[in-house]
Length: 111
Length: 114
Image (tube, rainbow over all chains, first blue to last red; front, side, top):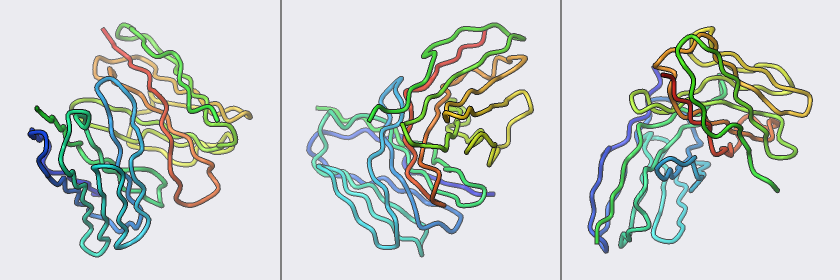
């Protein structure tokens, strides 16, 4: 069975601290997405990682992909309250064509 | 470009009823996928439509069905609603021309079944 597992599932951080969210997956894929979801809202695309070794950064967030280890990370640098949200990774499956999502990591950044 | 739109945004139904949700993709996108999000099961793939044909289907009962029109708009129907069908239903669109493409999600329809 195809699985995408995130950890931690809940993360409470203080502002200014750094932390990493991990996304492990059990199938071969060279495309992985990170999404952000605010309460009651839809999914906002953060990063598309297209190949092994891909690294992308936007503001205080940096995502990387290691297809050999089947691992992606989302690193948070100097967290701020505005980053509080749930973060999902999703693996792009070719056949059948669909996204398989992780459970989500609920991030709470406290002042 | 306008984003993916979904209507209605909120729905309240009772058990046994049926419901139809609508999704309009980004202009030029021909692939529409539907996902169900619940607290217990997370985000799960329902089905994908491309050029009015269902291309892929997730592991959901036959009560869940969909269709796509010639303008790429898609509808999803759930018959004989159950309490467990309460969820946020998200649709996503993509061009549909590549094997792997970024999918853009709509705002979702929140369905509550009483």
